[in-house]
Image 1 (tube, rainbow, N blue to C red):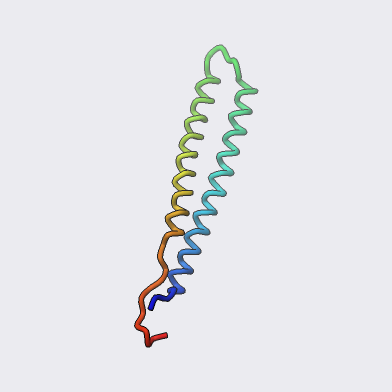
Image 2 (cartoon, helix red, strand yellow):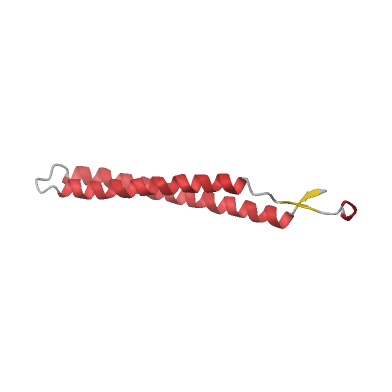
Length: 94
């Protein structure tokens, strides 16, 4: 007979919660970086030296990496949800 192992189930819940917390934190940092890009565009936009393009380009690259990281975190949640926390026990044990 298969039963849920409470320790495994608890660990699975902790794992999902931790990943969700990471998603929240990374999303917050992404939003801050997007605000920084906006500020940079207003502060140095159209600079003849081209520094605005360099700064904004660097921020855009960072945003792209953050996006990839978020995709990986969302996939991690899906994998965590698939963890089997049940186990086989002899019929007479429960």
